[in-house]
Length: 311
Image 1 (cartoon, rainbow, N blue to C red):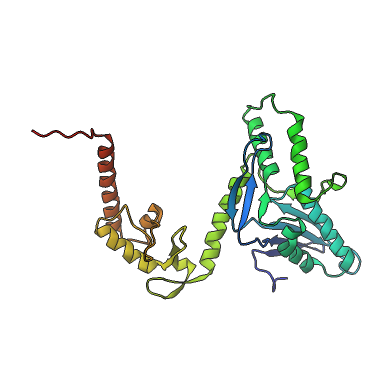
Image 2 (cartoon, helix red, strand yellow; image 1 turned 45 degrees about the vertical axis):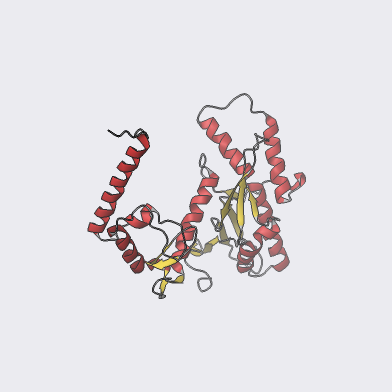
C-alpha cells in the first residue's frame, strides 16, 4: 500500500497483532461541480449554488483481523464531512457487497470504488445537494443561540429526511443509519463555508504542485515560485511579477495594477502587491503612501460640494 499511496492518502500501525489502516480518499469530481444548498424550512427560498473543484477526502478506517483475507472481512468505519449518514450508510453496504463478491484482498478495490465511483453510485452528476446538512446547521445554531421559535414543527424534519432519501436513492425501508457511517462535521460550524474554505486551500496546494510557463519570460517554474491572477488564471513567475509591480508603483499607478497579460483587465489584489517577497521594503512603503494619498483625495472628492464659484 505504501508503494501505491502517498503519506497523505495512507497510514497504518500495528496493535495487538492487528494492522489498523487509515485511507484518505479524494473523490474525483466532474469539471464543473456545484454545491447546492437552502434552508428546507423556507420553501419559497431559492437554492444557492457554489462551484467547487475539490472536496475533503472520505476517511476509511480499517482494521485487519488475523484471518484476513482467507476468512474474515476487514472491519471499517467510513467518515465524511459532506455526505449525510444515510448516504454514507449506502456506501458502507456497497463495500460489504464488494467483499462478499470477492472475499480476497479487498482494500485496493474499496479505495478505487470510493475514489472513482462514489458520485455515480449515489446518482450525483454535477450538483451535490447540501440542503439537509445546511438546514441541520441552521437549526443547531438557532438552538445554541436560544432563538428557536415555536414556528418550527415536525414537518420540516420529515421533509429533510425525505430529501435525503430521494437524492441518495435510499428507500424508507433501507434508510437505517449504519453505525460505521460517521458524519465528521463540527457542531455549529457552517458546512458550506467549511467546504468553500477547503476548496480554496486545496486549490493552493494543487497549484504549488504543478509547473507553469511564465507568460513574461516563458520559463517553466513550479507553482511554488509563481503567482496566478484570478479569475483570468494567467500565471507568471514571482521574479517577473516583482519587477512588474515595482515599475507600476514607482510610476504611481497603485490603484489600477492589472494582470500583465495583454488586454487583460483583471486587477491584482492588495495582498498580491503587498506581500514582502514581491517588492522591496522601500517600494512597499511607497505603495502604501501613494494608496493613502489617493484614498484621502477620493474621500474629499466624494464629500465636497460639487458647486464651484468664481470671483
